[in-house]
Amino acid sequence: MSFTTFDPRTLGTPVYEALTQLRSRYDQALADAKISNKVYRNHLKEQKNQAVELYTYLSTWGLMRLRAEEIALCNVKPPDPHPDQLSVEKKAARNQEGKREVIQEFFRCLETLSLTSNLTLDQLKVSAMNTDDYLGLTGLGLAVAQEFSFWASVVYPDISGQE
Image (cartoon, rainbow, N blue to C red):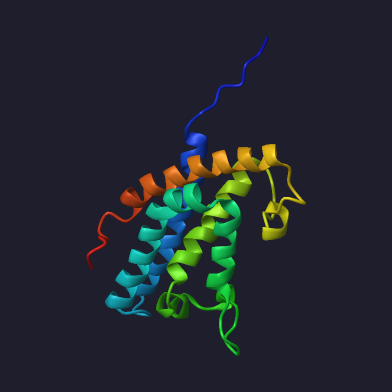
């Protein structure tokens, strides 16, 4: 009989990499003087706060509401392009973009770890996913959210909520 051993680093590694890559884009923009220090720090504060708050949001509202929150944060007034098409400088200056980016990375990590792809709002609905699958995915999502909270302190040690 063979057993597959769960390695806890399976959860932490993609989360750490996601947050590190997310922050590094803005570190580079600051180093290249494309954004001001104030805009940089405010944006990173949004990222860190969202990463820390993911677990509470998810445990209170669930995956469907979190995905809907990301969609709501994407809605921009025409003629602005979709946030994914903006430059790092414009993203940094856009209100609540840091929150959206973290939620987006959360779902990317969840998709990777759950071996699913494109967890859209429609796929999370009752008609598309049975209860057991949704609850299992939510349980995994809570574990991933805990990792985001932990790694936020490591990736953003210089960013505090009082700034």
